[in-house]
Length: 83
Image 1 (cartoon, rainbow, N blue to C red):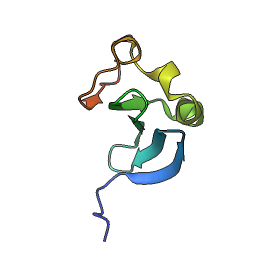
Image 2 (cartoon, rainbow, N blue to C red):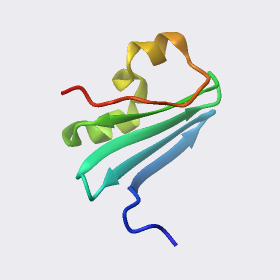
Image 3 (cartoon, rainbow, N blue to C red):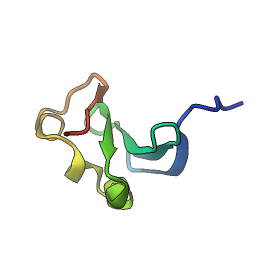
């Protein structure tokens, strides 16, 4: 059973070692994407604006910070939404 406060999966895709999940948190009304990239041995989670959710889902590296794109960290990272 899914925890009632857990983010809800809105979309999921996997292709060629890249796994992307679009999530919505009803409690905070925020949207994020989780990315697992086995090709670069990295994973990250980034918040996205609701209006950009589908684009971020389709193009996660466009929305990822440079530290992830350029550094390809091996440890999972969570990136805070800029204020």
